[in-house]
Image (cartoon, rainbow, N blue to C red):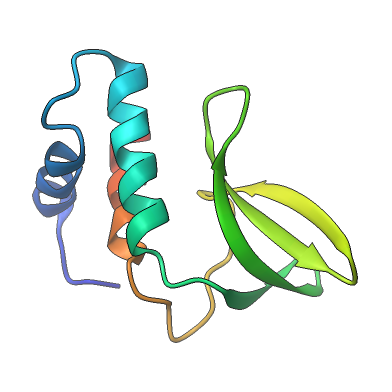
Length: 103
């Protein structure tokens, strides 16, 4: 993906959460970095259907989700569950930093 190891992803995550005191603030920092840096829109396949990922959001249960659309229907998919296309869009290192942070 980006050539970072576990320590590298931890360092990237620390950059996103540098001023954060609580887990909610850390999540918000990581969300901001994913939202800012992920190359949108991009297409991928979710349960056999080609979708366009055209946004990122925070779910009510505290997860970063990808907002996917297909034929006028929009659905949120957990960003950690989202299959990434090849080649991967720019900014996916922030998804991996979030994965590392989420444990």
